[in-house]
Image (tube, rainbow over all chains, first blue to last red; front, side, top):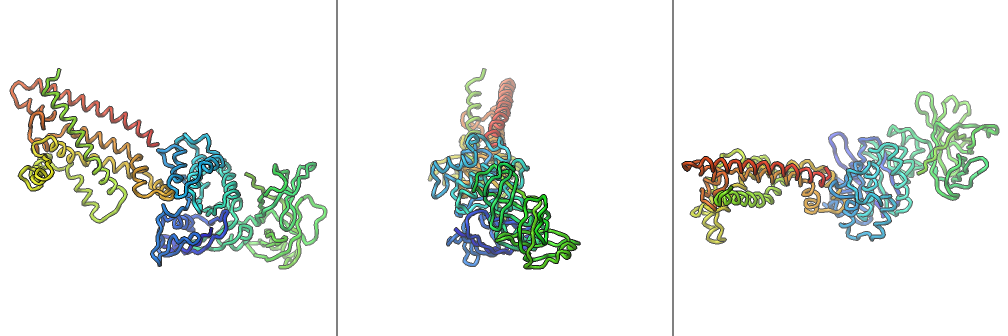
Length: 359
Length: 228
């Protein structure tokens, strides 16, 4: 299932002009500061906004083609939409809400599938409740279930966590991760939160003032300083998918393997072989020209310098490659000069801290 | 306590008000839906025309109905000859006049309730596969129910008090068009009828109190139902 999008539309304050395609299932993040046109794009894909010009297709099915005068109304698009404000029907209990789209789907999901989604989202004991008696996090989960049960071929998520506090956000995040890992459903996830994007997305489309500023895998984009600076976002430097290699029980540590080396983190409550995504901030990486043998840091990785960008008044962001994994180190320009850093040069990267997100 | 003529007037009032409100309701729903969420040329004119019965003297409304629907008037003649429907000098004419006079009450209450519904809910329903009629029946109607009931009760109460349009259009015929207000008027016109007029007035007041109380109970129940 692929999605291809080309939209041009004029708003009072800015013009939207984007073109992108999504080929794979999993979560693609539509990332950028507020006012970049993210919601307008998902509204156009859902059919809630009729752009001045453009073409939108899911697989071979054309949903919009302004030249051919094709406009498929939203109800026939089979695109699930999770709104920021959940938009549950206040006069229906949770089960009736869940079954609203389910009842109207051309190919209705089975009762077994209904039960599976209810249990996946932990909705079992909410079914008889009215939306006004639900917490913000519960509303979000019900709205997610309602969208999933309408048998969509694509799911749009418009900042589903933005209106929630940190505790509620952490309540929903694991469900989104499970959905990403278990459902073969492509998802377009609108967000202006780097944390959410780094944790959930496989691919990222960076938007700036109604245009696509950059797109690619989350690993490449979040380590791409130019792309991140173009939308005034600080970069994490690196997002790395790892697997738990083994636990060093005696030391209370876990060893995570990735393409390019190993990382040592405090003991994780995860089985060997399970996937863990970690982040390393550019500010947390030091560089050494020679291998530091007596040092307290656990994570020392042999890398190669790929590029150096000067940033800020006295900073240099050094882009590094470790195997197939990209890192960034933020050091002072004076240090870069002292180490005589240049593209192609091998260096040792010392990660002072590794951020591990676990649902 | 009440003699047969008084009971007759009471029951006739209730019947006329019920029929007037129920028959006007579908039209009021359509008008409210049209005015609440659609933009079209001449909307202000339509809006104004719908409010006309509220500002016109009821006698004028009754007179216009007589001109249009009297047995010798073109429309009235046609209806009687082809469909066997007679409005003039009949309780159905009283219901028609009351329904028209109180129509703005219904439209106004329903329209306000419809405008208060969050448009985002309709969009969500659209993405879940619901078409326009589906959304109207399953979202708009149930969510506007407090307004629909409030409008109906207000209109019902106003129907019970209608005088001018009824007496002009269908006259004051005992057992056919003599509703409570017309009965009170007749009692006051006849010598020694003050006691009867007072009795019927007390009855009207009790009826109004019952209506207001009922409206409040219904409102509370329905708001809970509609999740407000």
